[in-house]
Length: 124
Image (cartoon, rainbow, N blue to C red; front, side, top):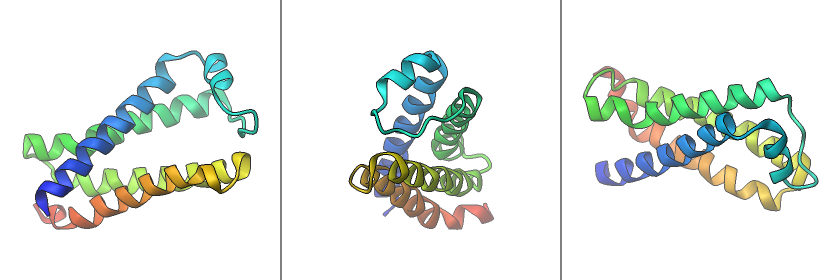
């Protein structure tokens, strides 16, 4: 189970580091062009905030375990990212419909899996 959790944590970390970095590096106008025509348009500062949260959450999924320090931050990062993905599911359903909301919902479930699997790290 530990190996499976590490695999999921690393994949989620890569996903969130990429997504957050993209939101911070690519100009807002270009990001809006890349989205679907039905997307819900969010303010630029909010998009940048989400990018920072995704970057920090991605780091929080792996760094505490790798450094063997403050391991209780990993389930907290996973919970925070799950909340973020719940918002992503809602925004996707509002803009593009249920069919495209499956991907953020699966990512949400993986974040919950990590939070649940690493819950014993809170005591360390």
